[in-house]
Length: 276
Ligand SMILES: [Zn+2]
Picture 1 (cartoon, rainbow, N blue to C red):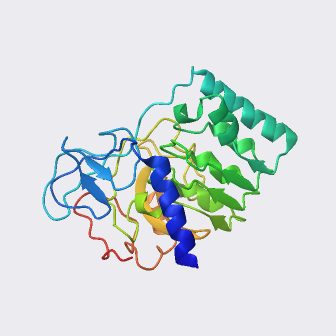
Picture 2 (picture 1 turned 60 degrees about the horizontal axis):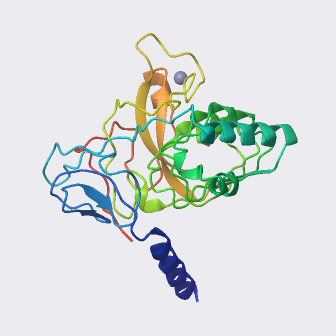
């Protein structure tokens, strides 16, 4: 029964995504779940981002697939962005329990123009369900951590979301999630390599204060680390911005079956074998 449902779903997804163009450059060594196209770029087996957005062709060898974090800019002058800001303001004012921008944005032809969310999502303190199904997002801002009522987080088929901000762990009520696992850095299915840190991030991804203690950053700036933690029903690769080594050391133990310490990614990072 379960398999039949899954097959139907997979088949539906193949129809929905047929013909879309994909991303990720790398070396010649294989990344399971990804494929190298005639143009020399690596693409996920299932569609995703703009070509070349994710990787650089440097680095060879067995694990030599250097990926780069998406940094495509959000056009904040676009009508699409203003509409999204309005939707957030309305939802905050009405204390809505669910935030589902997709339908309205799709109807207006705006959905594909949205690659980041504004920091004003911090105002969505009544929202229990955040539905970002099928988005073109490349990053979730750290302000998601202020969405204190959040119980359900659904970015499913947002194939350019390869990582999440550590601040999502502040959503203490978050219990349910649906994430496209194969597109996560370090995921158990294909162990997609983590980009090397420190890295440039898309605008809006830097938290105002330490991800761990909320203290101010020192003059040298934040310390970036990756850590894979269970969040709701998924293990997510989280990007930490710590004020100090003490805060890095204060991070919880990573999920079993993932890199067992906070790390800086890069092509030489050893990960446990893939499975599933
Ligand atoms: Zn700190």
